[in-house]
Image (tube, rainbow, N blue to C red; front, side):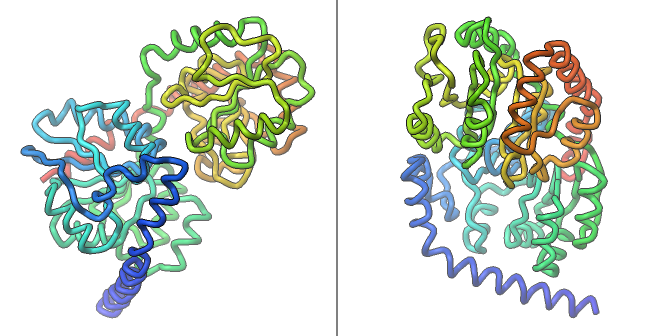
Length: 426
């Protein structure tokens, strides 16, 4: 039976690989299409096929952080690795230019950064032979089956850390069960965020799982976040309530603008999740005849007639949170799964979230249960929540304090993950 399962998973991975090879000739077109909105996709493109100029004469500890969220979440762990392994080279791989830019902003030259290649054998082999990592870390839910198999073949310990798996993702992985089972069992260790994540991973065939909590709770705001927030608030104005809609996704700005339409004297700050959407959101504001100013052009106190600030800057999310009275965390009003509400709670702010928070299910449920966050499932609910909180500053303070307390009580994943990595470094 074991031999049959092995052969069956091998056949499935062969089909998976053939499918990737079929798609490979179209990847330049995909990069070109994305480059229309984000020209950075044309930079370092050779790395996506396994060709690298970056070299290191130190043993390499490699972490894969897909984009902005994973990179920021991994920051406490990366800082701990830099401190504990000064004679090693920390290598970060990314998939998106924004993830790469975030690592540069956070760590500068202290780490190396490249794109992870497409998951075809020749590119994966080039990557592993070029960098020769002594250990590899996949953050959250990144399962690339040829990468995992090749790490196993080349005796590179590969870990899945801060792992999360929603019910929706688990259902999707079930359709390719043997391939997923092989991949999970080839990992040297898995550290799940919650018991629910661990149980879903076990049902897919994973073993060697521990539960360590959510690394995102260990992310600390920049030292100057509060001071920068006060400076921004001085520009926004001290006498108007400020409502922040952070990390909004496509289609959510329409809902938000409808919700704030009849709230007088409110200043709304909208920060789209992806920078390539800044112009799209600006066009929406123009179409609706809304008086707005852009954060990038904000050098003096906003005009009294301004209704919306378009947050068209990068790396300032903690500053935005510090400057606001009420925060809505995007990606949750429509079925995107929600963005990271921990950052808003860490800044002691009352949080509004929609019903679609499956990417942060346990955190969202805890936040709601502990009165740090409110669910707002439609335009009317958002409008009512803003009205209620504006009229009740004490409730704002209570929700903010509850969120901060939740964050502090949930810290500690960094040390546990560091111990797992240390155990696997060869």
